[in-house]
Amino acid sequence: MALVSTRTATMRKRILAVLRACPDTSLSTAEICNRAGYNNFEHHAYVGPQLRALARIGVITQTERPPGGAARWQLNSADQTDTAFNAAVEKDPNR
Image (cartoon, rainbow, N blue to C red; front, side, top):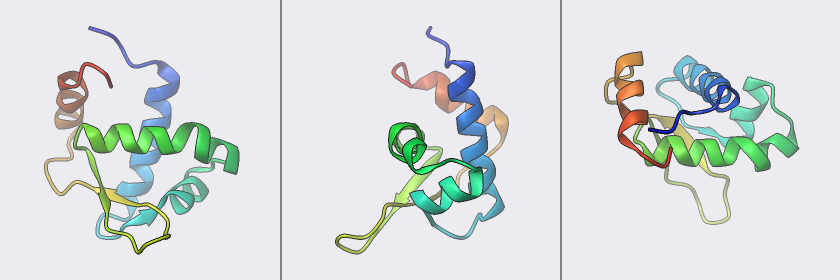
């Protein structure tokens, strides 16, 4: 079983804190970056891939966007406890 790095875990916590603060709203990647304190380089290099990884394991969802519009994300409406999050991460071998 591979472990998620400390850096990845910290980034995911910051991303999820932003999304948990707006549970009924989808936010663009840029909005998430601004609220979490990430810059434009981090947006493309780190935050985008982590958002896609969190969506793959079912913790967040990518909402519909207009053609040419920014990707938008929100929490999955399922169980959002730490136990459920850890189980989702453990279930995906590629994290």
